[in-house]
Length: 465
Length: 140
Image (cartoon, rainbow over all chains, first blue to last red; front, side, top):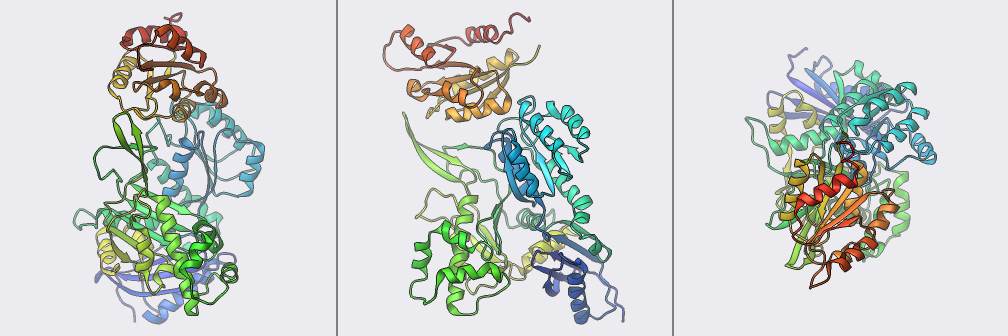
């Protein structure tokens, strides 16, 4: 039996699992969900067919879907290397542009590249290189040197040039001579204190769609679906933005933070201006992007549990686990070997919770701004770096370790402002929501088709804790 | 003629913004490319901005009277950062108390500043000096 369908299939090719969600546009309901191990290393369609078969079994084999859209973080995600001049200025701006485009930043370089750095860069095998350096009309020497280095390198991946515009013509000549594939974009930092990352973000997405998907062996999958539109983190960012800002007809939740705890990293997305909530505070440092994403590569619950232990302090975690009888180090050393394994005993569950709490706290402290008091002749002065998120009223949790944990509110509680560390400008009294259906990526994809419906589905299924 | 780039700011824990704004206005009017870092600027921030913008001069304002302490090592850090030959200018209210200006000036020049100015200096004179020091006069 064939039905006229108004349903959308949304697929996430993850590094571990290929996930699928089926959403009915008319009723704005989630009809089905399933997942199967990803098969990117062999043939991506094996994992894809497994989830499609499963959904056909549930829905009937003649079922037709109106939309079939996907995002991907498989094959290492979208790996980028960023290059700038001064670490705190153009190098930081380039890194933020890449992170905001959903990339996994595998290397950040500043000043003139050395041969050694170039070898290292080549060895990380990025999918895209972002070359910045110099404000418009500013320093040319460094970006020209770095263009020459890239031109002579063995790299064959696209280079996005987003530095001093006064050097752009020469860079073009240099990269042409080197036979490199490149795109010239607007400077990520046209002048000191101005961040201009929007054009670069959209170019990164285009490059991802046009070239990376093919290179990653994801092309086969496109025969079965309408398109792989974006890297998974970009889909999550799009969802975060939609849920925060709303649409012309459907109200959003206002400024918010998304906490995404995963096996390899913990990501924080904030959709917030982050201006100081009290008067008389002096804001310093680079301007903050309204939609900001940070990725903590050392805070993953499976692949990087040992580094969570190091970052949080072993004594702290041992104290939190006091009274439980098990070998902490042995347990942690087993994690990377079985990343899909869920906790089986009460003590394993407690360990997971403690690791997740610490990952959430540290990731949030690194994402949120800080304030410090300096004393001048006229008395104390408050100086703020980064975003003040104390006024943010919504924190949304996602990612396996949060969704499958028995007490997600305890983990999210760690992302809240605390007197124990009053200099960290974390949300003061937010409401917690849990993405318990693992929908955020699908919401981001769905918003490409119908933003109003996507937002209503998100509001319906985000569970208030 | 090539436009010269000037990095401008108020050094240290110092919130005196009025002089800074006047200097920015004067510099722009004279055709300089101005990178104004505003108030509470550290030595490192001045130098990093100068690198990124390939600046020709750094104009350090200081009105709280702590400049002598705050400016220590400024030239050395420029040298270390590869901007050793940058034109370094100071002004505002650099020291407190009644001190002989020539002595104050001598101390700042010894620290590696190319020019320093006493309180109540008009921006006009500073502009003239800058044009001369940056070799803009010959080209006019």
